[in-house]
Image (cartoon, rainbow, N blue to C red; front, side, top):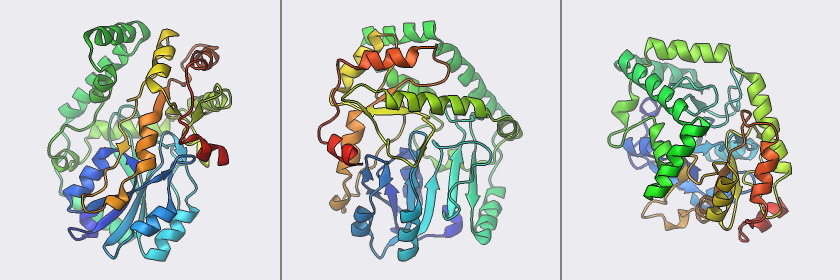
Length: 354
């Protein structure tokens, strides 16, 4: 997409202040400058008043990320982009709700990925909905020149995921977590690195591959057989936990337009204590359950430093709320969290107002 658009080196792209770091790496690899727009913690949407302050004559696009399985209202962002003549791209990788989900019709491009931990995973691959026909044709023409992904590379991804699935069964996972704690190692970092799609180093050569036939077949199968019932159960479980969180904890993004709870992040003033309490009760809460992070402001744009987003990420704990938990687990999880946590006092007033 970026190649087909032909943006100039030094052009700026406003980005959600919390996003996957590889998105920023892709922009920078094309000579573009990512300028973070701080978030409203209540709905995880970029603050438009901040975006108004950060826009410059070099700004060309706005890349927004729907986080943790929820979506924020796009009307204001669409109006903002139209008013300033910006392209509007939405990253829906964490918010996929099934094959009928094509994103906001007013976004220029809506993007979905199907990596190892995503909803409807195909262990790789991506889909983009592109509104402009000429841009789409330009993208297809460029992709056609890329080499094919080797079948063996996809086979390695499948074997890696099988090993990961075995390791995350309760007994094996508990033993691995215990060993890393005793050895003083970061177990959350090991889990995230195990499912990371791309290696450190040059990113574009790893991306610029046409998907192999087995990957395409896997993605087509997952879309045909999408598990709506599991998504419904995940949503219902997350909503129950959100409504029954102990005093002092609140769901980050609790004011989003819709939520399916791909992840369940809560704000805590003492996150390590919350994690310890949950693990004592047999629940693997974590701080590093997602690869997203706060985007650093460019060196010459200190006014873009995302203070609220950074503060939020420092306070987040991800609780395990998913359909495969045994009956009664969510109530025990809420009880385990109750005596140890208080909401970050600098964040709480905004959430209460929301």
